[in-house]
Image (cartoon, rainbow, N blue to C red; front, side):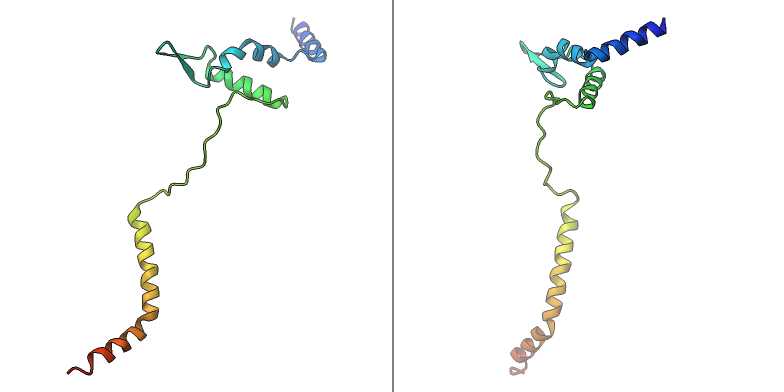
Length: 119
């Protein structure tokens, strides 16, 4: 019994009738409606194909070297920084303090020149 099944499967593969092609033809209408589901007459309808079966079919198609055109287009990468704003500001303040400390000797001399003539 198992030998007959293996022989029929081998014969199908030899003929070029790949099982994923049949599945793809069968679910082509459902796959075109979206990834998760679709709105019909104001109500949300899930796909007739489960996510597990959809993923398995996608994997078979990609392993066969064909294109899978049913995925939604990807969005742009996130550019917004993560983390707390106070951490970023404190780092900027520390950098500014280092720059001011480099200028400090000249600033002290200017201050002395400004204050000393008045006593």
